[in-house]
Each structure stands twice: as C-alpha cells, then as structure tokens.
Length: 183
Image (cartoon, rainbow, N blue to C red; front, side, top):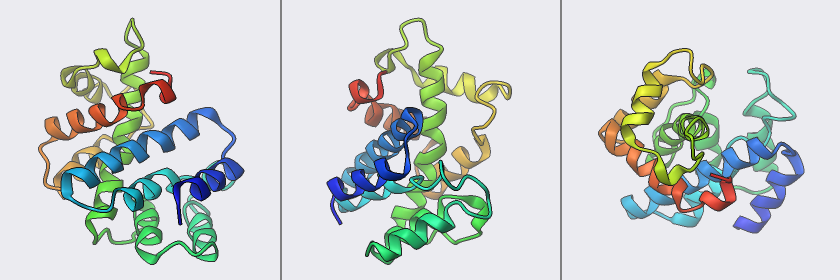
C-alpha cells in the first residue's frame, strides 16, 4: 500500500479529470487532518485518494462504493481503509467509527463545494477564497445542488471541529495543491 500504487489504481478506473481532481482534493484534506490529529498521513492520504475510484465505472447506489471496497480487499488494502471508504457514502449505512472514517466523510462533500465556490470567483483561484464565500454558497440551495450540505455540517460535528474552522482547514489543504487542481 503506497501512494504510487494507489494513484495507478485510481487512474486505471477513473478517466475523468474532474473526478481525479476531486480525489486529489480529498487526499489533501485527509493529509491535512492527519497532521492536525497526529495520525498516519500516508494512510489517511491514500484513503482520501482512493475513496471514489470505482465511481466512474460503478456510479449506482447498488455498486458504489461496494465494488471498490471489494477491489481494495483483493488488492490487499487494510480493513480500516476499506471501512472508511464504505462509510463515506451515507447510503451504505456503514458506521463511521474511526477518526479516519469520520474525517473522510467530513472532507468529501466539502471539497466539492469549495471547488464550485472557487470556480465562480472572477479569479477562479482558491487563494482568493474566503470562509464567508463558501458559507454563502452553502446557503444557496441552487448552487452546486449535488453537494449535501447536511453531510458537511454533520461531518464537521463528527470530528469535533467548528464548521468555520473546518471550511478554513479544507481550503488551506486544497491551496497546498492548487496547481494540481487548476485552482
């Protein structure tokens, strides 16, 4: 289990540039929080990177993330990573018991909202993005309507981080890889 092997698996299953960038964003958020919580940054990063790798080929609630978790098991990924991947999707009903699983859930939806909020800015640069802009977009139900606002709030609560701080943390994490994200 290393980043390069995980990246190859992601690229094998995911051809969409936007979905790959989502994976990189979630990876960055997971690495940020691993450092903050004193956890294994490599493991947390890999978990973020791989969480949606099966989505492009298996997008239905009957398949995602179940197919991916099965592939991860066959590839020898540890159970805690597989459980976190399973739990990031609310429809699975899988409990998020570990801090890593709770953090993956907390970061996942928020990265999508942050990306969308960045892309509507005149500069299209995440360096210019403020917490207040994300919160304003969060209130607009018509904006990035596929992003589940309740899951963003629940995720922050589950990891014990104030929503404003959580938004700021994930913006900071994504700023670290802004060139990769094209933001």
